Length: 260
Ligand SMILES: Nc1ncnc2c1ncn2[C@@H]1O[C@H](COP(=O)(O)OP(=O)(O)O)[C@@H](O)[C@H]1O
Ligand SMILES: [Mg+2]
Image 1 (cartoon, rainbow, N blue to C red):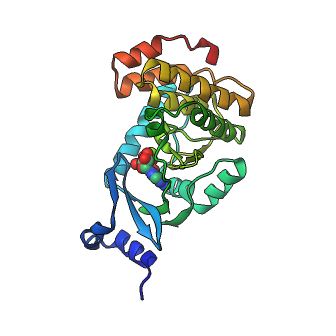
Image 2: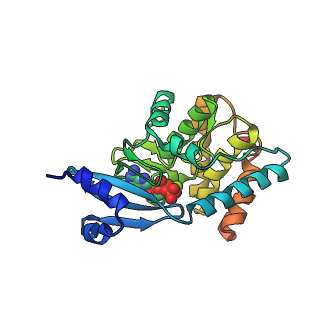
Image 3: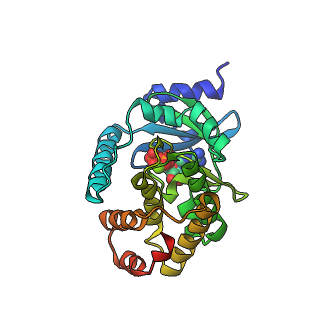
């Protein structure tokens, strides 16, 4: 008899079966890069991430934006590598390296060129946790995970709060490892800080400031350094570039000079 696992693998390769298996999905949401669905496999909830056909185009745009920004800030920096490097980043070996650095990730069950299956983390992503009001410890933890990665001379590149997951017991894990790079330049490190802060800068000012302060404390607790000096400039570029509005400008106007 076929196991649920075989069923899942078939599902990934046979588009015709998606409808039939559709009833097994209890959550499905469409994302920028990948289609993410949650299903049950051998009695355990898992997440299936399938690349969208537009993924390569989006990545291309991202790489151009990254390189252009590095030139604008007078820190020309090579963009993250695409294609097979991204597959390696999401793979078993890289997750083991991250575990040794002290960065937990969901357990990986399966990976191919176009899709992967990993354990479902029940507390949702960090941005949603912030919306629910849980800020201090979670932001501190995200800051320390970023600091640990920088200590090991790696960067996440796309470090938005939606790429962190929270367990029901409040542990913070990191997912979406595609853009991980072995890099330690000021620009690439600042991109990690700037992209995290830009992802939460639309929240109300008190909440944003609390997250910023805790993320900073967590980062400093690992690196013994303040944020790299391009962090706030990159935060501002990304914030204005993606969704400019009044709250963002209000939060940007608050003094952040003590962070760098
Ligand atoms: N293992 C997981 N458990 C629970 N939710 C997840 C998991 N992985 C991703 N998600 C949810 O899916 C969203 C998108 O996943 P992500 O891997 O970042 O895809 P993308 O490459 O499209 O950005 C996350 O922000 C999170 O809400
Ligand atoms: Mg993501």
